[in-house]
View 1 (cartoon, rainbow over the protein chains, first blue to last red):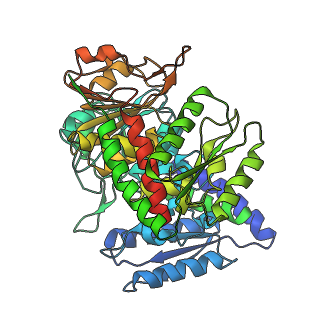
View 2 (view 1 turned 90 degrees about the horizontal axis):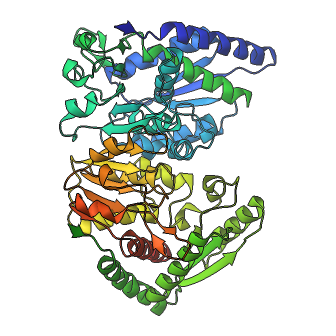
Length: 276
Length: 276
């Protein structure tokens, strides 16, 4: 089985972004990302640290705005204020959000031009209709990783496990744009293993450690693991049981697969926004 | 095989809409739909006539704005003007559009509050994220027709043939909202017949007469035909060969299936918009 690592791709993306952000800095423009966090969740904390590290590597300033414990209205007000701030070029609202608050309810307050993680429903509608917009970085990273490892998509069966507005749904549209035949599975899917075995490309973004085992994977299939679950001991693991290596043709690792590409693409989006 | 007609459902939808529009009229409010047409296409002409007829049945005023031959910019300007017109409650931009013009490019000029056929990418993004919005009437009609005939969706395999932003893509989201496992096929899908045979509910919105035959249908499957193709003799036919009756468990007819439900729902949207 072939491993599909993302670190090399992330490094090459960062090299280009780094050069562009240096050009902008020489022209007096400091590319800046604001990350708003409203949750003390452990996976979220891990993501914030990886964003700050990725920003540092490419010369993007990264401000973390800690709103843990704030009401939804206060979060939306901060997003609107950052949208109006000419010194801020990208805005990310970290998930998960506090119980009872949905990303789509708040992300409408992010200026689409600064919506570098494609969270505003306006960005998603534009992606769905083929108009220019920043795609959610994780969804874009799956496509970039598949391209980097020369996994063909046109005319092939892709199965996405997970129907979140953050990953599963936008990814389905990106895969359709690449002419894949796309199936979306979720917690209510019957005979999940049988449906997943139809996939030539299986992308798992369910957020449940070990959900996908060898019985879910067709012989020779390419498996992309988008899961980022933090174990009791603080280890980061995916949604895919490494035992799928018995049947899969290729598998992206966690950590070191989609994750580093995601943060590298997010930084590219920030610099693109700053340059526009 | 069971037929799944739409006329009875359309009539009951119209009865409710008619009563609401009469209440609004008594209160001095004349619910009004503006239909902008930029194409002399035959299927489009058929759709315009059916809209005008449906509007008349429920006491909704229907203005057709004929912009055949106009440039895209002129069409967008008219859509923006109608959006600002307080006397207009619903705006539909008829498809197909002239070559080289995409619905999404122009429909952004339709105020989402008046976007009764869910064409603005903002409406589509809201549907994708579960926020309130008018769904494209055809996609909503498919769900309404399935509900009316008590076809279960939760946990079942649904296959949508067609990936347009007008029907296929939004319908996939509506089916996901109903907990179906959804596959989207299109012109680049390999082994279309085999993929379609996996469907317990097969919805065909490809715009190609006779595309789907008995070999595409699993035994007992429910088939919804969204196609509206006009033959050389002016007859309206669907995308599904009537011969699928040999294997299907249920089939919606064309005409008299999804079509009348679509126009009835569109009028309901106009009256809802007027009332809000």
